[in-house]
Length: 358
Image (cartoon, rainbow, N blue to C red; front, side, top):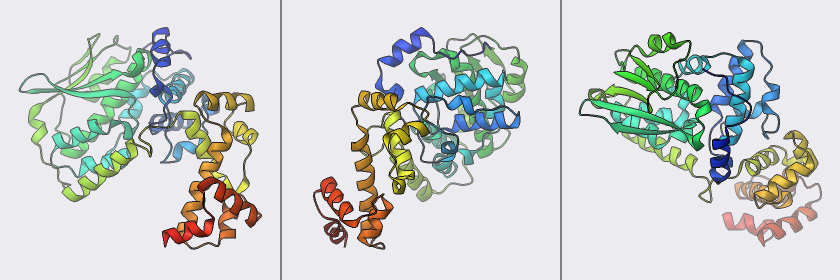
């Protein structure tokens, strides 16, 4: 497999620049965290991978963190170049477990059949950090294919993403129905790598390269295989929560820079961080941060006020803190200043917000 370069291919850049979803923060950072852990195991310093991405290493462990495809793909390119581990995708993928899928893993584990679990995985693929486009296709009465396609025409990272995805999917399917599950064949839309023998060893089926699509093909008989953990109530609840994770309030994911600023502000409300503090923490200049926010149609003060208002409302409606304590929690040492700010944000004094929740 050719080593990925730092910049995306020209076709990828053109396609991505026309699509606002390229910088929408909607993917959990699973792949990023796995690569950092692989670097740790090999004694490689990963700090430079975060430069300019408005991300920090501690944030990768935050279950609420979402990153954009731009952030994730830039990070992965840097990681693969630094690691120089050609089969990194297979190494990470073979460690996949259903527990690593979080709520989606719970939904799959409590599904009625393997087929139901697979459909849940396809429907909610973004909640587990999948950076490829996934679909199922019935090839015949006996063959079903999981098809993976690159987003934004980004074929450069397809080998890593596909290796990790197909390997982890197979490990999880075997976890659900047992080790007897074997694919009929695995097809890959890229050239045969030097370590192709590892594919055959892991998938235990013919591996074919240079094909039109990336497809993992299984016998349709497996779809009806009942799952021992079937629980209809738990499955329904888990799928509902997965759906809520996929669609944030307002219906559209935030742009990556807005999500990063909000995340940082929420963690430091008491300190009243300024724009230059936030920019420095995000490894950006103050000028760059202003420009990026402007490109997203936002300004720092508006984001800061909204985050403070949301947190103040939560604390007021919980009812356990005084108005002065709520003000202190969102960065105001003077209760009168907090009352004025809260009324500016919401149109009502904090006492009224507390009464409305009673």
